[in-house]
Image 1 (cartoon, rainbow, N blue to C red):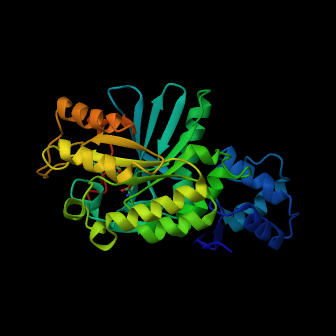
Image 2 (image 1 turned 120 degrees about the horizontal axis):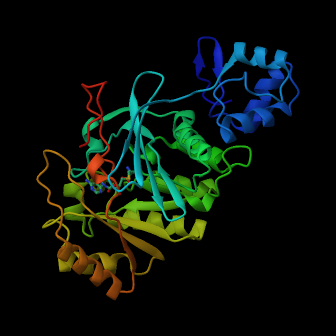
Length: 360
Ligand code: SAH
């Protein structure tokens, strides 16, 4: 059975697989097929209580209310960016901790960037979230509820969520079990029924996690935050590289790609004067040339109290041109919502301030 989290003596159902829900409902003396009905209410329709589950008899609903609960994140703030296309949600978890999710609209695409941890145990020097340290892992239900919540809101307006990226706060592969459970539930028909090709996980390059995910048979998209093309530089800005250097990381990425038969994405945060030279671009191109991939160049988004500089347009263009000339599929992600600190690497909640969210 899942990590059974209980509120009072009630069992928390959000995060249960259909099979586990079945075990639970039969333990209450209900018919097994009730599990599917309940899963559809919880995940698909986003119900937050049993009272509204109208295809269940009143007595059944009452029994469920006594014995079970459905996690429901509170939204503490909802901030829209100037572009009108990006919304940052600040969610409050049952223990009062907070995480952020970012909704981005792009044409017909509605992508939610979800968090997997409160804070992050890594200390990448250019990222705001790393400054929080790791406060705790999110449960599968807490990861999922970011999606359930936003989707319910979109649907109420006749819109819908189409894509998911695990690129919010935290390192997903360091919260492996809960993240994999959440991804499976996003994908399952009795879960959120989001196609696996519309789900992407981004990792700092935690090699054991990538290898384990390759064996999972999940075919979730993989994005890797490479950010530097030589070990000396990468180790300087991302300490994870001291333990798992580039060659090992790329070997894991190759193994993963073979398993899922899908292009991987390399993210490359462009830091002016640090990793944006002509030589850096050439090294990057040479490094990933033989891997079916896409490179996503992200001009650095400002984080307070750091010495980094956002590259000027010309430096970005020059860098991208070199990659494209080397025949690499390259996109530039001018992050959405920088004005509301919702850009990549800007998600941050001051540890001392439960009341205010602060952009990095
Ligand atoms: N921990 C995972 C998931 C977070 S994804 C990972 O590192 O991949 C967040 C992405 O934003 C990563 O690619 C990271 O390298 C990038 N990033 C971090 N700080 C940034 C900043 N200040 N500006 C732009 N991108 C940043």
